[in-house]
Length: 298
Image 1 (spheres, rainbow, N blue to C red):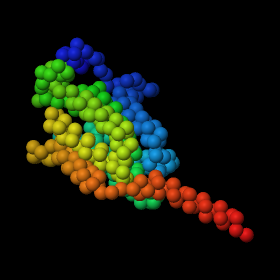
Image 2: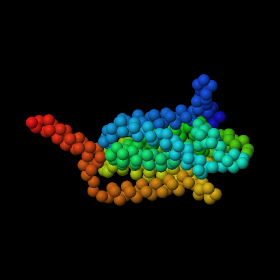
Image 3: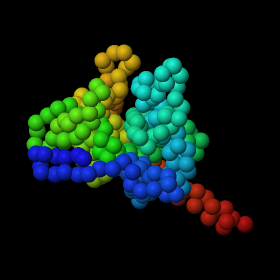
Image 4: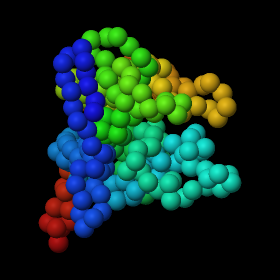
């Protein structure tokens, strides 16, 4: 049972949505899949505005999806290794693959997505920055929906608070099962990502001056929000035995990187002709004219 006592709301949450031939289908997985599907549909709807073909996006996803899940899981495992060790110190590989119980670190998935996209774009000879721009909007959709998977798993919550929107939960802390009223950090991040998506999709897109502008805007926006929200959480991943939060440091780095690039790039003059989508239009026109000329020549 999860409640929001200050708002008079109480919700009964279950990890398992239904079963198929006895196999449990978890809400966490369904929510993550829903976020992914919505992201793909939206990106396919807007992809041509960036000079990318729908087939390129689908082909990229064939490689990116499984690798990004692996990347997100490995990132989590590396900094939470003790959770996946048996009593004798050996690794519990069965536990390591149980992603439906939670334990996917978004930054691991984002970093893997960047690597896969770079390699894919180099192979296809298409603009990585154009792919990154449209993909950034998809990332925000996936993240704002996916955080509700943390809600049903009762995870990724913050420290104690008395704010009106506090969340009341029962969870085990230091071996004691207890009731707590905490920051609903999953909700904070979902709403932050929603605001970021609206900002990128309906504001930045209309004033895009260079390829990569949405991508660096995403890094800056998400980095700023995540750095703040991560400081409220009680389940952060740390740099091994230090008290340094991994995702908070990475978020601050991406925020500085994104804002730095935007600051210097937006001060420079840019021509709409430099955008990948417009370069593709020119190349297609030239190719068409050359083809027609070759056809007309005896």
